[in-house]
Length: 576
Image 1 (cartoon, rainbow, N blue to C red):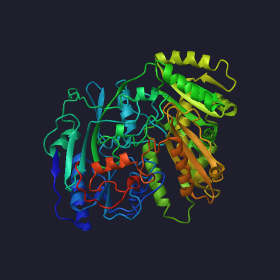
Image 2: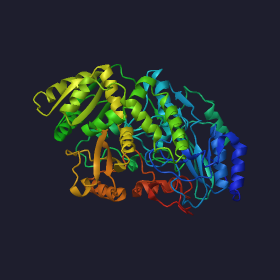
Image 3: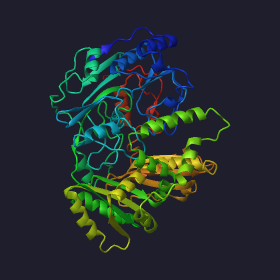
Image 4: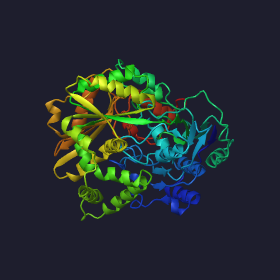
């Protein structure tokens, strides 16, 4: 552990001068008009900042942190800025200290170690980057693109216990990381828990790591976890009265894992997995909530081979995704995932500039993209559209290797006598379309709100985890709530029982009041929320999560205010 002791407090001007000295003027953006994109949330939220920084090396990040400590600044660590709960940007203008945003995307080195069985990721490396590098060596990552965004960083996923779509692997988790934190004495300390020696001083440790000055094939093994190895057993426990995974689960809060930016994470070490030799997708349709609940119970309790993926769509979100997610679907299909993060970043910058011209319509780029997509031919396969007309509930199950025959035999028997459901075996093109359609759902819900902004109210987006023994998994809402809803959109990770529930409110309805009623019902149901997007500035952190944040960040200098906790500086006498 290495440390830096704070000097006397610097003025704001001195802080900016130090940043410029360290990074160069091109990598310090203090102009509010030019840095607005980085101060604004992906879906909502935003606030002011003294500066947004773009360090190019790990050691530059460390040196900027030193300046922040010396200047008594609030630090918000940011990578791809794909969070949905406002957790990677400032929130409002009511902080008690200057706010500095440190964007880490440029520091994107990724190392495959120990015969490709593990990786070390620096803070700017993305999930797409990881997928591409592992594909070349026939390995698979801990997670794949999930519910809402492209370009998400690996460290961001670990920091927020992101779950994603993979049934077998659970939330992103590791006990092996390298990070900086501010201790209760106000000292910046560097903690190397990667399980490998990299040097003594912060400069030596961070420089050696960034440049790969270590034996890639001889990194010492560790008895600490680099993934959630107990998740399969946990999800198979179908009679448990608790959810399988959620952000405040204290079983999976450990240093970088679940930290939500309360420390500055420089690197994480994660497991990789063998790739499947063969995969097959089965497309299930049903009218019965209970039928799908029984299917889930039988698969999880009796299958020798667990599904790779099991994604759910309700008919209503099927329709919204088909119309309002079409441009996302076609962009991924024809441009590939590699190009899209840059395109979305460009779109975000354009939106920020256009927003300043009050005479232009709101969300102009979205509206133009929507218009362009609608003139293109039908993009969804015929059999998917037929199932849309026949069934209310849609489930996509991807199996691999020996699990393919196991699932085929099971589904044939399960639906043999059913008059409420059926399935078909997807061709490769149908499989690709089914999962692209599912992926486009979250963005489509936002697009629907944008296109109908004159007729509808706000969108309330919840991601929840329900008890594993639940049979009536689709909620039933009272009139006191439904009277406020224009649309209810349900989709999620079915075998994990993690659901994304987007509600388009009627014009004039009070979103805060509706959310309060919703959360009260979820509490009564034994659900946990948020399940994988973390608390950000939209949810109150549970006591276990609050205590975890306070241990990591006793002075409340990193990302204060998340979990609806105080934003003010804390003079803490607690032990780390």
